[in-house]
Every structure is written in structure tokens, then in C-alpha cells.
Figure 1 (cartoon, rainbow, N blue to C red):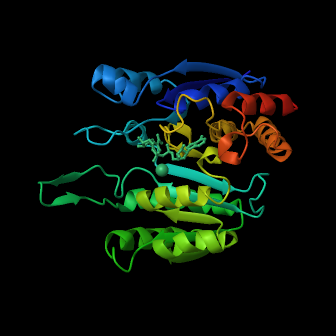
Figure 2: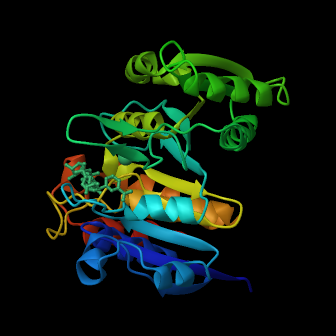
Figure 3: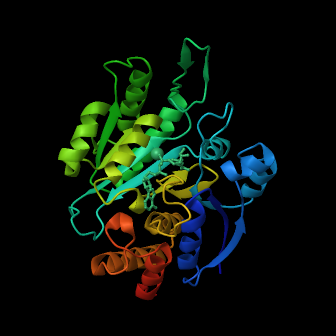
Length: 333
Ligand code: NAI
Ligand code: MG
């Protein structure tokens, strides 16, 4: 039987609470996992002065996949490097894939099904900044190579869905950087003649995601725009507690909830583990273990529909563990 080598990185805050829950669910399957733990983030920085140490990075690279919780990026510490950005760049996880799909949550419209495909290694997250106390400059890096490979991911995903790609830019103002991104994406589109493709400005997209989310199939965009749109879109389907993501590269893949370390609720045992469990589901899809992926998703929908064991973010008063227990009881392998 296949053995899946997976690094578990809980990180900081609620990352430490939700990752063990996702692992509990994975352990219900008959699959063989070789799990190893790695520590990165702000808690590690306090001990070592680095948010990701070289040794840890080498250990992580011994795995096929990574299940990641969330890390804190504190403000006001000069030269602090975001742990998740470091991983995305060091492992060249260039495609950030964020499905926004309606689950059986009361009060949520049931027809939302879009995917945000976000370039994950450059853009305004290049971390190239300089200046003095009076003026500061951030470099927005857009390259043809990175734009091409993310466009291919988006068009390939669209090919398996409703065959529609919306390229989200601000080419009217960021004429050169967004211009190169748009032109490169349109060039790739020529290889996918039956995919309907259009361009929409980021501000208009922010509005349309709220007023007509059914319009979108695949949104293809740059790093910062994708980050903002995915939190916004999460609001349509129940919030950050329910939205998973995948960060895919040629060699590695990392799966993580869209949310951060949520210091406001950390330590209370009430974080919603659904986004982390669904991130594990995306990992199973990546491993082509569709049967288990579908069954876990189905169990989550049963628990949501019953609405008896929900965490406070979904209007319930249950704990992180209660929700996972209910999912495990609803599994039918
Ligand atoms: P956040 O995503 O941690 O929290 C935003 C809001 O959503 C909070 O009110 C939080 O309680 C709620 N929330 C998030 N996840 C939840 C869950 N599973 N269940 C219930 N409620 C949930 O964003 P925030 O507060 O802006 O950032 C906190 C820290 O996390 C910062 O240090 C930030 O840099 C970091 N961060 C890390 C990310 C990552 O590791 N990928 C992503 C986003 C933020
Ligand atoms: Mg974000």
C-alpha cells in the first residue's frame, strides 16, 4: 500500500488547535501516512531568532506534502520574515488555489462555486522594500515566467469546470505590471480556445463577488489581489473558519486553511476546524484519493446540516473537538 509522507506544521495560535483535528480525521481512513512534525512561526522565532530555521526547512523537504495551520506575523519587529511566505517561496509553491464553495450552512446561499487561483511567489509580496522615515518603496515584481505558469494552472482547472476564466487586474493604473500579467495570461489562453476568458478590474471584482458570485468560475490573479479577494469571498460562505487552500509547486504541495492564527480566540478551544479538515481533503484530492476526500466532505455537510455541533463562528456553542467528533461519527467509509 502507498505510504504518504506528510509534514505537519501547526504553527502558532489556533493553528495548533485545528491541525491535530484534521489529523484525527485523516487517521480514520485506511490510508498509510508517515507523519512528521515541524515547528515554524513566531513561537519558534522567540526561541531561535528565525521564523523558519534551515534545519527545519531541510526536514520539511523530505516530505511529499505539508499540512500547515497558521503562523503569526507580528507587527513592529524589524526584519521579521513571515514564515508562510518563506515556505511558499523556498518550496516554490507558485499556485495558491482557494475554492469558495457553498456548504450546507444555514443562511448561506447554496449556489456559490468559484475558485481563486492566485500567483503565490511574487507581486506585491516580493518582500523587496526600502526607503527611509519619509518615503518607502515596495517593489511589485511581475514576471512573464511566473505569470505563464499560474495562468496554465487556472486554465487547466477551468477545463475541468465551467470553462470560464476571469483575469483580475488593475491594468488601467498599474499599466506595466498588471499589463504584463494580463498579456501573458491572454497569450496562454490561446492554447485553451474553448475557455471563455475576460478581464475585470480588482475593485469591480470586489463588488461583483458580493452581488453576483455565481458569475465567477475561475478567478486568475496576482498575489495581493488574490489574498484580499479570498478573505472577502470567504465571507459569502460562512467565514474564514470554513475556507481551505492548496499551495502547489512542481515538487511540493502545502495545504492550509485560509485563516491566520486568530489571536482573539486562540487558546479557547473554539476555533472552527472545518477549514483545516477541508485542507486535508484537498491534500487527499492531490493524492488522488477521491473516495476518502468525498466521504470526509460529505460527513462535514451532514454535521453542518444537523447544526447541532457548530462552533461559535457558525452560530453554535460547541468546541473545536465537538465539531471534529461529530464529523468522525458521520464518516461512512
Ligand atoms: P485571522 O484569519 O487570524 O482572523 C481573522 C478573524 O477571523 C478573527 O476574528 C478570527 O477569530 C476569525 N477566525 C479565523 N479563523 C477562524 C476559525 N478557524 N474559527 C473561527 N474564527 C476564525 O486574521 P488576523 O486576525 O488578521 O491575523 C492574525 C495573525 O495571523 C496575524 O499575525 C497574521 O499575520 C497571521 N496570518 C497568517 C496567515 C497564515 O499563516 N497563512 C494568514 C492570515 C493571517
Ligand atoms: Mg490572507
